[in-house]
Length: 234
Image (cartoon, rainbow, N blue to C red; front, side, top):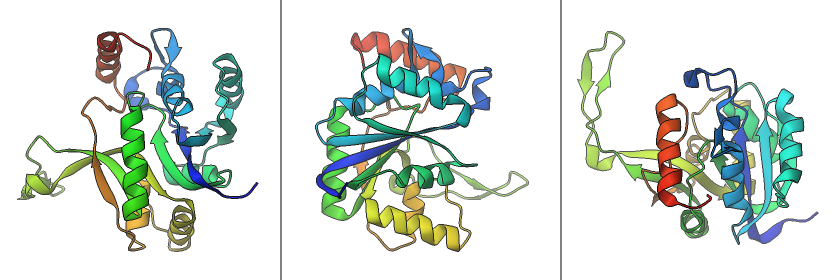
């Protein structure tokens, strides 16, 4: 299959265990209104007009149930379920091997409240600038502290943004960034860090504070509230 110029693929990362949730079940498989969180997330991209292919990265013990759900929920854009690596960075690298689109989004499987408009805005911003990340302005004052928990400095809050997903890149750029990071033994906390090291301009697209990453019991309660308030499937 050749590169698809006018479409984007998405890697949905769902390989984490989520120890902060305090459950035996991985957080992405917990249910909101009787549907797994991961499925809520996947359905948003399934219905996006610019997304042509979806690759799920998950744990080796969860591949079968993901494949079963793909059939059950009629997720026709999911092309591959891939076993993740020992951390997020390696998991994304595994997923990249199965992407054929010219542009790639990377998204957390436990961020089900992403909207169609945000997906479109991220895509167009990336095409214009070279790459993009969804983010929101930081509300709280942030302090840099040392190991003894003594304050070292107070960054200018007006210049601070809390980064979310999706993050959007040229597929070739992200592949190169991962290869370079591997060769240099660099570990980043998100894919944008790898792209930034290559000198690619990354544009920030303002998102929503509702685009939460569900990682704690409080997050799950808030997600249930958001879903009920919307009064519709996400």
